[in-house]
Length: 297
Ligand code: NAP
Image (tube, rainbow, N blue to C red; front, side):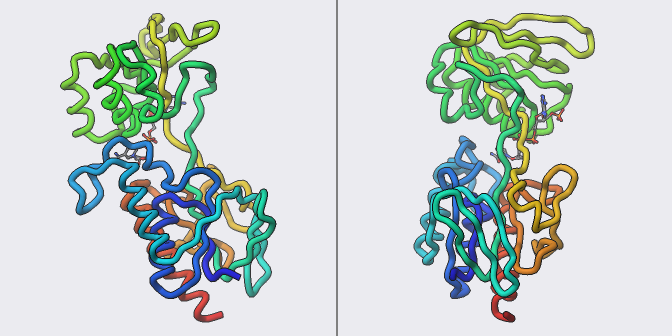
């Protein structure tokens, strides 16, 4: 029986692990992919207090090492269900059977929102795949920080970067946008949507339609990077904790869900601001609330 079992080893989950372990609890993290979460795909993080600039991967690695050093254990498996046995919880996993814990923190984050196009040359990670398209023409779809960051990363290696956004204003940071505007090889295509992905064995061009004028154009590109936000992945917990209409976990201000002993932290819960800082703050709140809960059992 573990004291605190944390589902998801992103920023929220790893921060929760640091706090729970430092409070003297045994901690197990269950992660289905690689530890670190979404931030490993960010080329640079410039808005985490104390760090003027740090690579997302470097940040995640340092946080992971900190959690493990504190005594947290990590298990690589997919969580498929959750059970409330009153005095403790059961966490079902795909390969490792049921794991038992006194308290559970759901820090499952969110996964990329698909655009409905797949195939060779369609990517959801510029940091991972950008280097394959050195000196080629590429496109990025989206208008948030991920899209701006991706376009900036690609502008250093690609010949031309088309940034296609469905609105005429960006929701990403002004400073990031200003940096991007300094690059002559970045072409902004606003109020526009991707209507077609053309090519037989690999991507050759994109069909684009301007939503205001109705004008259509074809862009010759070798790759398109989709960066249109994220969606939560909480279906496995829906029978036990209350979700909102979009699938995010409802919590109180201490990250407690509708089920006593189960907490939610990070991008997967209902909240307004989804940032690295708020993920870390959630991890802290959830861990300390879980420790209090265990102490009163
Ligand atoms: P986001 O902020 O939710 O932005 C999603 C973007 O995709 C919006 O521009 C949205 O357009 C567009 N979009 C949504 N659905 C679409 C569709 N079906 N077709 C076309 N466009 C669509 O997502 P994000 O950029 O991935 O950022 C997620 C969070 O991570 C944010 O809080 C962000 O600040 C953070 N982040 C931080 C860093 C960093 O600090 N370095 C880097 C990356 C991300 P509309 O505006 O028209 O709705």
